[in-house]
Image (tube, rainbow, N blue to C red; front, side, top):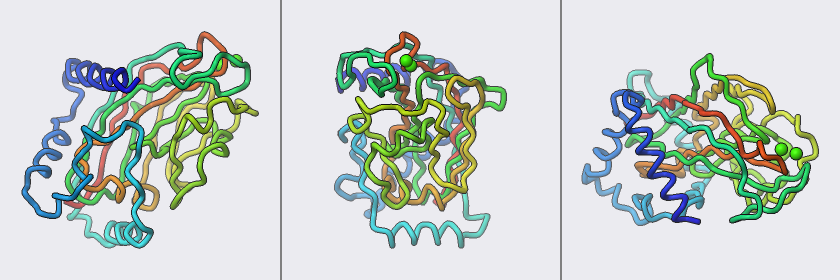
Length: 268
Ligand SMILES: [Ca+2]
Ligand SMILES: [Ca+2]
């Protein structure tokens, strides 16, 4: 299964690269390796630069609260001129149908979370302290999905389109929920129309409801993103995956193609 996932990542990158012009200047791609070979001794830390060998789906552990608080304060107190931004365009191609009864998926069962399928992507990280992440589809995008959709960065949930499923997950740590399909598989959905969970109560979070079409707009400030930012500090890339779930229908584990611009604000 891991081999398949890695191959999907590889193919996804090829597709993105071949589509041309999607990377806005490739600044994100250029910045990350530059930081990695800077020779800064603080970069040479065990476990910090091992994205390629890390276990897929295993998030970097959240650092202690005081470290996260320090990052929030650094972001809050920085002069406007100290911030830089990198932008990357990620396209998740359309995907359809659940492989019911395969891998971690159960057989079909109406009204239960029986299956999930993931469209993987890789987010390039700049070298520095991340103070905000904006994720925007084009305003006229018509994202549509069935049953539910989860966007995660390093397996930390950015949004989960049915907030009712959060009760099956581990309790949030520092306000951060982690996506773990093994925790929700086989659980009753309850209400298909429960509103979405989004990271950060105060953050802008727009996404279409179940069985609706619309754009995606998520604007995460340091207040929301700092625990994740501190956890992934030192990495040059991180998984940013889109997962769709299903209960029993042929039309499940479905999402339309989604293109998002990911703008990362950081202090070099
Ligand atoms: Ca159904
Ligand atoms: Ca369904």
